[in-house]
Image: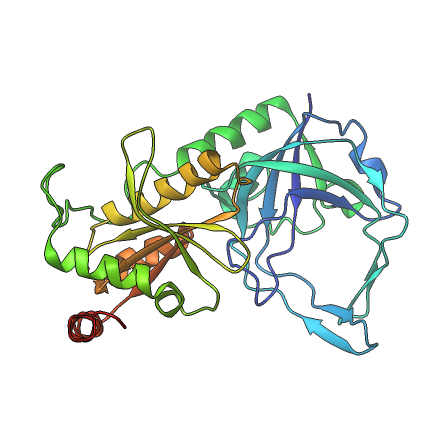
Length: 318
């Protein structure tokens, strides 16, 4: 087994800021830098502060510029090589606004093992025996962007990466206002749940969303408040709360759990599902945390629910 450090340019503008591509690319003519590169090798992925601006030719012949976001300037992920480098003979050269061209002819897929750690450039440079202010440009043999590591360097980087992974909650977590298990369902919660089940497309703000189940049970004893299906047939595990205060992540955790259990229980492919948290109001810190973990948040004004219930009581056949 060998150990490597590779450089990726930061994500392009419009892409997720924390996006990391699972692969290694080496320009044509510099493949000698990958001698010894093989399946099962470990790769650390480094994002510099900046990258070149790509000139992309669209299908209609027009061109657009794709600029890189500001990179984190450090090691952002670690992965395992899936297969040796292979030649992408049909891959076109990339053109950049600085007048250069690169044919990224050699590629190997990498399965990311972790994106939760981070080694800043200064610590990375020092660990590799450079001065702390070294910018790491032209990394690797023939400026290939791929550098083989010694076992000692690998162990050092792995330790630094592991030490940087989170060990504390990102926000101050509270118990919220949830009733104890078996404590029953309050009228506000019931009213909101019924409203969501009756108006799934309205609540999610998208067409063709249908209610698949209400109080959907699992063999574990868990019960999803509501299960929806979107226009693509994806299952949506939905948790209803009345009010989600600061630090109250119980509802979000429930939504995540329902999503994953639905995938297995219904035979869906992994990640072909969604998690949604619905409440009259959701605290900003919880929304930010939910966005990080792909939990969608929807707020439904209480007056909308009250007006709907009043209309239903006056028009039971409607």
